[in-house]
Image (cartoon, rainbow, N blue to C red; front, top):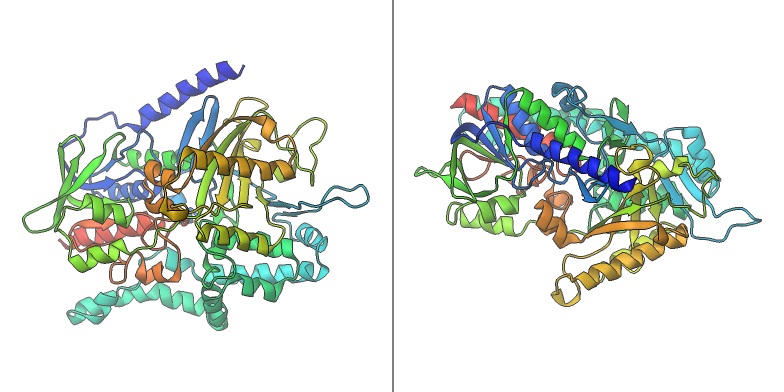
Length: 576
């Protein structure tokens, strides 16, 4: 049965890949060329084409999506190979591009968070666990197993976070303040640039008396905030994982609170704070955006790797040179690659001011992430929530499953290991089993599991690169920890893929393996993303723009960088 299913799925995958390649031949002239078919590049292309700008997308890999991609890496099993959950897709993009019409289907998760304890059960009962979802009363009952005080405090904490998160929404859907425009040039230009301040004013007015709270949240260690609200370790540790996810930082480090807001300001199909699984994997969202872009006339090509940006005699971008030597000319070029890749690899030597090139080299791309994709022939059976006799999934199986989260100190110790150049001996683990809700991902009775692990450095102790032995050793450690929570897990494994930071860089173009296209630290946000004075999606090369997650508002906020970049390009083209 598995073999037949595999053959059918391979054929289906081939059809999807074939559709990803535009049927028309690549032309030598477009109005705009987008380098990279990740979700932001596709969003930018769709809006440019809607705006009447003839646009081509050139993707180097055989599939679209960048990190938001679905691939059958183990026969019969389809994985969200890198990015694995959908939430922060901006509502206006969802509506404007009619993504539901173009094939996007999302399975909503409720409950959404499960933290089992590694402890002995008392009085014949299983170990405790913490299960959180959208039902506030149930959440309070779950938290009450660890602390009645925390159960009472939790509703106010959620309301507080939601208030802060809702206030910064205007900043996500607009470029940062145009500082040069406001402070330099003719009065007419300066008056026009004042419009860029409106989102910041809206944000401030909405925050009101909560401005000091917001400032503290984004600058203080998240542990300081959590300690003020809660006393139970499992709750604090579970919430802390949302603050440090994807970041080489610990809950006790200043500035670790901002990403926590992402987990309450997300929205899926009008449900705020919701996170869901995309049918067919995360490639489904990229494919729906591509379908929308094509419907408006955009040309999208896979297996077309850009070698260099073409620079004209006047120093402006005039198109791109492909790896095969062919040229595609355009009025503007948008890069969905990281700033480092765009300016250090794709821009011709000498085309950038030396001080700018030096600043690009200093952008922080540190990554703590190793992603492990696992195919299993049965559901994990957690000691804290034993499977039923019929083997059907329980509510907890659809959640983000947090392991090694008994206390914040466990997370701190994992971080300290990585800072010394060692993969964590007791890593922070987030497991997701999307096939529990989406039957298209695995053969009947089987499942795909995403294991998002921290902390693993890009370079190991002594500055040495990862070896296959290092990958295997770390993976075995991860599986041993999962086994301790869910005995029998290791014997259920059918196959696996291990993606250490260098692998994430090599396969997906994520510089340093950083999933956000650059650290989401305070010195690399808003006006300083990717660099101070270059946060408006433009670059020192006229006609060359950035549209990826390395721009404001940054990684995790799906589609906003592409949308903001497209609006900037459209405005510039109108002024020509």
